[in-house]
Length: 307
Image (tube, rainbow, N blue to C red; front, side, top):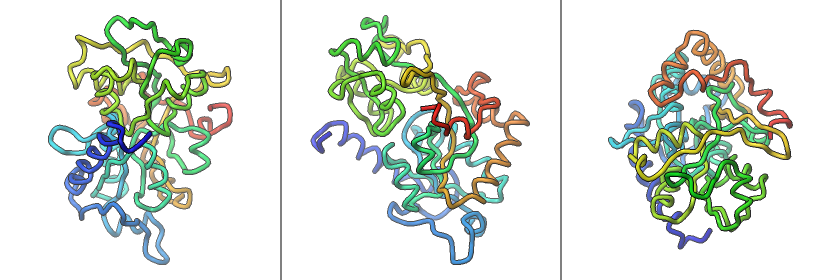
């Protein structure tokens, strides 16, 4: 996509707006410099360094309800709020957050710009090759947002592929893009977005016929934006890749060398699951009991059979 694309211009404005509120978004702490690194001092683990500093640098994508900037300019959502609660249990009271385009989340983490990705990222075999994931904190189905009545009869990515005149917006470097490609959706049918907000703008402006995201994301945003009169969210479906169903479930991403940080995080997350606190935090954002990951594990999601 060229720099002249309206989608690219919108994405840059969103990222700049997000960067301006990161210092106050979640907790007290120093401002987050976009080019800063998160390296610990020599001889320290990252977890030791974070406890000493009292803050974590997190990356989000502007996708309600997973992680987003609200009308007051504050970062919130299921992942940031869960991170805040878990970090407090780990002895880290400050969270700094920066919103970046979806395809910059993993590269930014690996480059040391962030300590963690808190964007509700799906756990997939390809991503597991690059980063380490905590145990999943939610599972979900896929869906489309379309015009009221679903006049084009879109039910799965295969139904999009079957009609070459249909256009759909999906996040760049997302599982939705992979699902679409795996179903045979042509490149010229897809518009790649930096975040969910701008993709819904494209739908409302008649630039695409559908937006592909999770059921939770689409239903939450339709309610928040008041789109019910003109649009609907299709029935949720389980994606099929190479003839096999996959499990859309996600969690927090870490650098592979920060195993002590990940292990401590998983310990607290397990306590939250057992006590019901995970459900309690997620309910504000529409993550009900059907979103609970149950016995699903990161090991299963990282296996070749899940993507």
